[in-house]
Length: 398
Ligand SMILES: Cc1cc2nc3c(=O)[nH]c(=O)nc-3n(C[C@H](O)[C@H](O)[C@H](O)COP(=O)(O)OP(=O)(O)OC[C@H]3O[C@@H](n4cnc5c(N)ncnc54)[C@H](O)[C@@H]3O)c2cc1C
Image 1: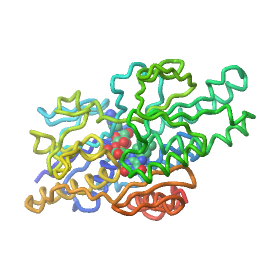
Image 2 (image 1 turned 135 degrees about the horizontal axis):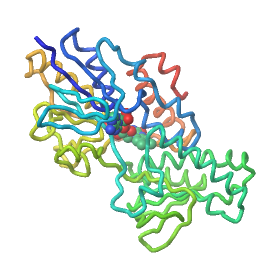
Image 3 (image 1 turned 90 degrees about the vertical axis):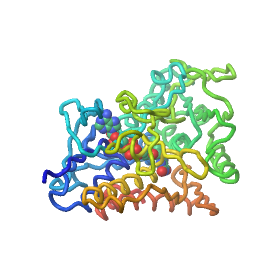
Image 4 (image 1 turned 60 degrees about the vertical axis):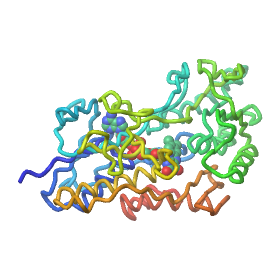
């Protein structure tokens, strides 16, 4: 019998976990698994705020995929996905066309612009390795440029759009780095402004009020200003314009206020809501028995609350693992053993810089150093799961 072809698009949290689960569960020649990714490396998106602010080397937040996979079991193709043609059961890449029997789409997210003019052109909004490398360099460049042109104090103003997890974790790291940058470039710290702008009335809306207050007070103490309940109306080369009409002149604007599913999915004709495909309990795209969407591209609704789960790494990993297990039992002719997806939400931790964090686990609340330790433990656990102790020692932040 010809082994079925399983194609996985994207080696992020969801796609890589699926590939590693196939590698573990499939017997030789049971299926041909191909993992397609635009880079030769997998990156830890949940830690990108650190290299973005320059507090941690970017190389520590990525790992060569070849070091994680067994190429006898999973073939890796480094290429860009261009289109998915479900009618022909093929995926078009820049340099290849691949036929599939089972297709798993885990292409991650893109920035949600909410139609704000100038957002894509004038903000840093790419949360990937090259995006954060560029941002880190740009931050330093602003300090250096200011020293050559000290009238332009706006170069030392940094606006962060969004006070969710990504925005808060980034601004916290930047707040930690500012004193060092000021020392390095001989800049008076009082000239640097870090401003977080958020359209919702509160920061970190996923956390309870006590933890939200803890986080905002901790960040205000580090010099971060908050403008809440005020959307950004436009971005331009001078900075941002708020819905209130106020303009903030800023040398750097970082966008961390929302994501949508990868645009390739929409372009390929799938039904989407904000670029995400509403999947069923077996993570299938509507109308497609053998096309599965996982991670940030999937819109999975909590049947109890009727609200979609937010896109997170913990859900992406669980989706990748369960889906691969379900496909393995399907290939073995025991489809009845498939399990529907039921995410387990262990909790959420938000880092507030190197030495502070908040965490919410059911009814448990944690702040300060214990939360920092939990955050580190979560990261290390993921490294261990994908690459064992060697990866923990190589890439871990202790
Ligand atoms: C700064 C930051 C902090 C975060 N913190 C947390 C946190 O603490 N906890 C948490 O649970 N979640 C957190 N998240 C969210 C979490 O990172 C995402 O939900 C998670 O990365 C989604 O996994 P994914 O596999 O769907 O996508 P990704 O991990 O983004 O992977 C997508 C993959 O697809 C590849 N790809 C994309 N387009 C193409 C193409 N055209 N061709 C080929 N390959 C392509 C990419 O290169 C990438 O490897 C954070 C996000 C950010 C940005």
